[in-house]
Image (tube, rainbow, N blue to C red):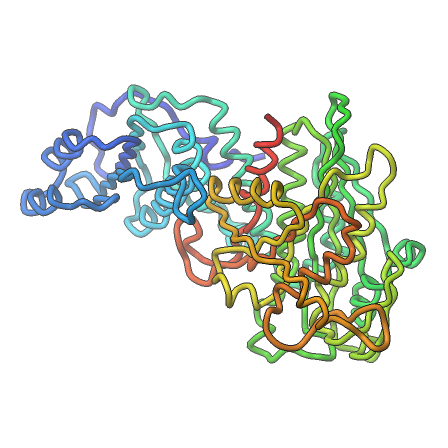
Amino acid sequence: MAKKWIESFTFTQTKTKAISRATGHVYFLGQPDAHFVDELIQSKAPAWQKELLRKQERELIYFVSADGPVWIFKPNGSQSNGQALSDSEYSWSRDSLGSVLAQLKAHQVSEVWMHFRGTSESQDLGALVGMQISSYSYKDQMMGRETTLPKVYFEKTLVPLQKNIFKRALGIAESVNLARYLVNAPPNEIYPESFAAFFKKLKWSKNSKIEIWNQARLKKEKMGLLLGVGQGAENAPCLVHIKYRPSKKTKQKPVAFVGKGITFDTGGLDIKPSAGMRLMKKDMGGAAAVAALAKWVDESAYPKPCDFYLALAENSVDGKSMRPGDVLTARNGLRIEIDNTDAEGRLVLADAIDVALTQKAADQPELLINVATLTGAIKVALGADVAGLFSNQDELAEDLQAAAHLAGDWVWRMPLVEKYASSLSSNFADCKNSSEGFGGAITAALFLQKFVRGCPWAHLDIYAWTDKGQGPLSAGMANGQAVQLLIQYLSARAV
């Protein structure tokens, strides 16, 4: 297997001879160092620019020297490791250094020298993660092209980077890129069966076991909601369970993760307008994040047990599709009136959550987290970059919020307003799957809460997409939302 980009980085002594082609230089200062910045400007900047550059107080100074472009990153110390929605050291470094690759390509630079001075471990990790995330090109991968990337040299005298930082960074970045790949892939290539087969074929350690429940097994398990959502599609629904148990035995109960995997969402008979259907291949973004997390857990030899459930289906328009007014029976026995066929994600999650929470003995989870591109309402409330967090336990919510801020994978806790649950009442069943009016993200979460059996639970309502390029995601498209948050959350639990 070819080396990943950051695995090819070279540690070497300072270059002694000039070369004819343009060379980029990136200086990353972990601590303010005005004297060093002034020396760089004096020695490398064009004469006409020096005075102007010295007056700049921005966190990035950029100019083109006689040898090539120069970037000086100097965080001003405003990054926060607390609860405010501002950058942590890690996320600022990831987004800042992750943005350099696109600029290097624009300059047609084939070689870049990295100079890290006084950086912390979290800054080093963030920078490397950002650089690796930015190196991924879905289009190149699908067309069988090798992405052209500049050669990177680290100046040995300035960089005391630890070897394990590179391994950690690669694990995080490649998990994010795996989720991005799955969401970017076209829906004629990623559908329930192919999604399940893709993960079955990946290389797993002996600590992970993968089980796929096909349509016959779903019927046997009485998973009427998952079956109902997928009944109008040519590609049948399925459930994937990835069971991870560490080599070292532990009495710790597993953490369960459930991902919504609607591989394409037409809205069903309550069909979406064409503009609203354009990005609906991303409606499996929750399952993509959970699956990528499972791969990280396996490859990092995580010390505690975890279970991962992917509820996979297509929501299609067909004579067999579920109808508004249909009543479906969930695995837990609740009868659900279909108020809106486009409120299908909560249905597949509900049955998968019940599977996760009815495991026996040592396999019964300590807590459950589900991830889903569930509602447009949450994007209206919080924008595209912040996920909605709903939880029935304060401690779990606080842990996820802390992890989100450290990872720069932001969430904001939303209320479970019990008063709104009455809008899900039905004259024909135990409840409806949706309601009219405002608070759609809240009523969706309240619907899911009916299936959690009192277990500590959190629901992440994500967008999974970047509408415009930013940071290491210069091309936009899928962003791997929730992967870094959940890696950080599990990493904190492992201590």
